[in-house]
Structure formats: C-alpha cells, structure tokens
Length: 637
Image (cartoon, rainbow, N blue to C red; front, side, top):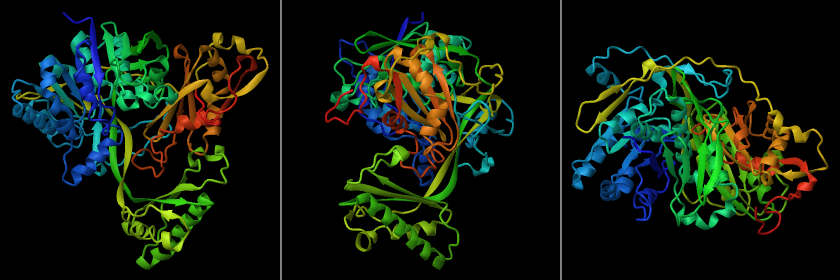
C-alpha cells in the first residue's frame, strides 16, 4: 500500500555545493524520522560544457567527487537507515558513475546494494544505437532539432548548427525512468541530464504509484522538485533579507519536503540548523529560473503555478498548494554545447586616489598597446569583444550607479574574445607590465600570466520525443528501454500580457497622497538564467503592496530600467495567489553562462540591481522607509 507521506531532502544545488551537506540529511537526529530519499542536483545549464572540457582532457565525464567525498563515507548510514539516493551526478557518463559506486559498495561490504544508471540523454553517444538494437527497437530517425525560444512567440531562438559541430548534446529526460529503476529495487539511481525536478518526481511516482495522466499530482510533485533542487535557496540562502539568516550561514539547513499522496507539500529543515523556512524564503526559490509560470514545460507534465499558495503552518514549515498540470508537449528540451572563439580573462587590483579613473586609463592603454602588436603577428582581425569592467564602482548598476568620486580601491577586469588564439596570448603577456609602466597602485598580477581558453556556447533546442529513448541499467541485469508516455500536442499561443485581476485594482482607483519607496521595502526578489534569458521574480512582502507593484512595476518600466543589461525584450507575468510578478528578460546575459564575457553571466545579481535602484509610489499613510538599507549604518530590513 502506498505511503501517505514521503520525506525527501536535497543535499546539492550544483556541482560545487558543500560536500558535507549530505551527512546532515542522512545522519538525522533520533528525534527526527529518517528521510525516505535524498536527492542531489549537480547539473547547471553550463555543467555539461565543463564536463565536456574535462573529458576532452582525458578526465571523467561524471562528478567523481560524489563517490569520494559524499556517498562513500555515508554508505553505512544510508544502508542502515534504508535511505534511497537519486542524483544526476552521472553527467556525461552515468554508467561510469554506476560502476564507480558499485566498486565502492563492494569494497565497503555492501554487495547487496543495487545501483541503477539512467541514460539515453546523450544524443552524441554511439552506444545509444547499440542499446536500442539489442532490444530490437529498430533504427531511429535522424535527429531533427528544432529551435527553442524563451518567449511564446518564437523570438530569440538559437541558430542550430549541424549535429557534428556539437561537443555535447543532451536531451532533458523526465521522471519515468527514475521511477522504473526504483520500482525494480534500485537503492541508488544515477542519471545524466534530466530536468532537475525529475530527481524528486521520480521517487514520488514510485512511492505513490501516480498514473502518468494524474496531471495535478505530477505538477505538484514537479513543483516540490523545483523547490528542493537548489538546496539552501529554499531555506534562507541567497535571500534578500540576508541579515535575518546571516547568523546561521555556517550551518545552513538543507531543505526537506514532506509530500502527501495528493501532492500537497510542506517545506521544512532540520531543527537546530541555520536559515529560515518562510513564505518569502520559499517564495524566492519558487520564482527562481521560471519563464512563463502558466506553462512550465517538463517532459512529464506542463505545470501552471500561477495559483500556488505558500502558507506558514509552523516554525520553519511552509505548506505549498495549488499547482495545476496538463499534458506535456511532444518535445524534449535539448542542451547543446558547441565550440566558440578563444577567450582570456585578467584582473588587476588598483588602489589609491582616483582608483577608477586609473583603472579605466590602464585598460585603454593595454587595449591600444595590443592593437599595435597584433599586426606584427599577422593578425588582421580586431577582438570580437573586448570588455572592460571596473568592479567596486557599481559597474553592474549602469546608469543607476552612484557617483563615488572618492572610491579608492577597484578591481579592473578585462575579458576579451578572438578567433585567433595568438591574439589573446599577446593580451595575456601585456597585463602584468601595467604594474611597472602604467598607473600607480597596481597589484594582483602575481598569480601567473593569464592564458587563452576555448570558449563554449550553450544552445537550447527541441527534439521530438520519438527520437529519444531512456535506458535504465539496473544492477547487473540487462538494460531496459523506457518509452515516453504519449503526450497531447500543445498549440503554442503568442504571448499576451496577463490582464490585471479586477479585485487587485479596486483600491487603486483613487490613490491618496503618494511617496516613492525603495522596491526592497515592498518586495523580495531573485533572478536566474535560462540560456541568454534571465528572469527576475518579485514577491510582495504584504498583500496590500501587490496592487501597487502591478500598477507601477510594468514590463516597459523594467525594460527601460535594465536597458544597460538587456538587448531583447521584457515580458511580465502575474502570479496573483502568491502576490508575485515574474519578469523575463531576453538577450540579457551577453550570450549566456558559457559564452558571456560579463562578470555576471548568469543573471545572479539582476534582482539585487532592481531592488537597489527602483522605487515605487505607495500611500504616504503606510509610513514605509524612503531611504535605502545601508544608507544608515547597521540598518536592518
């Protein structure tokens, strides 16, 4: 009989998260029930490119530290407490990771442990055809990649090169093959590229025996996965009101979801750990990296989160309800990596009077000096991009930066791209000489001469589901093909802004005396990347603020305000049940995480830029602060 509640914890948000986090969730106090599952997400959009570089240099295609530093030391506790593990640490080689875990389990004496690998996502893997042929599935159709847009009307799609140009090409698989592996007794399931939320939805499909057409339950389970996937993002990490949780940063509590059979989810963390679980901390993660909240497209379900509510039901306990599901599209998202130009990044610290002016003059001189030297090497083409950033002088704030004439310490950052590696080699040699022949007060070049590296570009595309099949290797048994469930074609509608709900503007018809208040006093916000697009999710601190945010925080205003960062358009979506707005900024990251030369290539600071520079008119009677946090020493939100 299926359980009534399943407890899932997430120990990793990305490759680089704390290797100590899993122990917190596995070795829970006796007063706390053991978790049923611990999941670990290692694959950001850019990670496959990083792994591809490592494979090209002879390294492994999976996250090998997962075995050495995370799973290996915890195997006795995992076995004793009967906790099942699901992770995408398999990267480009899930079977390689499975073999490494099998060996670690044997060496530790746990020969009964069943490890499963989910693969088939790697569209460049020649073994895909061998696996399919062994099962008698026949010859697959040639890959037919289709453009994918961050908007609903086909704008801003990536140009798709021939398949032979990709160094990595991975389809985002869903939850069904993970559930299949668990159904057949796997204790540990490792995958390659899957949608992040599938790491949680797979265990829920297994535990609750949901049907592939239980759309609302699938949507709720996927939302639980979305809330967990970024680890401490849901428990106070990366939180706007950072002072409220700063005392617990050294021992942050990783998130735990208690999911009921109807999909209702309660987010929490272990008692005694740092952080906080509130509607605002959970809400920031809820909005993170979302495009259209009415159509969160996943392999197993299309999710609508516009009516989701977040309710505090106890200390560090937030109940999440209201996700709605409908059939998925007949396509899978594909993440592709192709080589680009060569790039080089260098930094110098410059101190003293007029530090910013000295930094900019130094950068100009380095650029001009290299421009003279390149023709001597026979390099006729100029740099494709030569980016100069003066960190410490509010460079990310663009036209909203405060004039700081007395700034006395900055970091000069130069990042350039060129198709000819030699051009960047010359640039690398001309960085350190600035310390002796240019401005006074230069240091920081002692870490060695910067060297050119090959740039990679991320490309998003779609592939019809019949062209991809998931494969599950369970224990020592033969692999199994897991077909995708049938899906109903979804007609893409051209984007139209959400109408403002009438009940939210009734009190706005006759505004009283207004005063401009910094946005940060009215809302919290978080931003994240999807390719070259960035989203900024804004959540009102109080329901009464929401109508004013709707009226004044328009797509047009945000576009104008962020114009120094956005080359495309800005769309706004409303999420009334959570008093939230979601802004999607296209062509906003300089090419995206792998290709961009910007210091913030993933949009992580964009929400903070908006909160730090935008004001909203609200009734004077609310008596809200009109100054910015930080303008008064030791100010608190």
